[in-house]
Image (cartoon, rainbow, N blue to C red; front, side, top):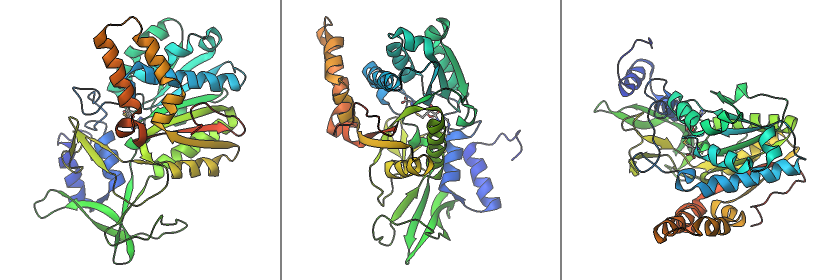
Length: 368
Ligand code: SAH
């Protein structure tokens, strides 16, 4: 496609399908979210009330503070290495990183040893993150931005955090039809609009289907998420460190269609207006755990729910502290944030927290 092409992303996708045939869902998702000109994350700011969705760090500063404490604990268990890299994948507005760094900075040695690394593809979000972290960089804390994990520095331990990052990575869907798995593809319907269809037959290879499929069953695969997890685990095994991944998803592989699009806090048709609405899939934590085991047997992983993690990390105590001396309205809003982050019918159960640690090291937040 020539770079001077001025047609919309949707037109370009349709033209590509008309000329080269249907595309798989992973290709479509990668274009809808990451097209350099019109990809969903590449220009606007999708977060918060005025945007399309609200993430945990945007609900309350307590989220990032408790994660900051978790990182501090792991850093101390690793015998306070200096220097160390605090890495965030997909930092959005930079809120989580700012809350973590504020917390870590209360420990003078950690503040001195710390350098920040943001892995972010979107130039507009990169500049938001620079703004959010300005106070810290002005105090001399080093911060660097990376488009991919490939340019992350080696040589010092990696402490990695990712919130709602893995759900934004492209997935493939396979669909079961007449006793065979097929790639689910996107082509043009009779009305010339984008439409799902049945693609080539897929061989199971060494994969084991999680349950007996019925006709029409959907099985999702996220090879990019697994590959990223493997690369990160390998470098952590080499350099030391720990990781915390938080996302909505499932603990055990299962069949089902979890692809979803969100526009202005409402569900939307995933094939409608590519680039103009968020598009995600639930994260298969079992396959991330397998990726870690395969890539780095010297590491272990543990998994729990967000509610259980935050409560064990002291969410209620922190809420109590924050609320002290505040007026009734502010106290109510802190109480609402606790509910939102930890209640089972809100983010508490659907969101999972996975930690990757050196074997033999324990971590707070994972007793249940
Ligand atoms: N962690 C933030 C934002 C979550 S949204 C929060 O909790 O508020 C997903 C983030 O990942 C955005 O910053 C988006 O631009 C970034 N992102 C999506 N795909 C990416 C990729 N392949 N590489 C790096 N960043 C990516």
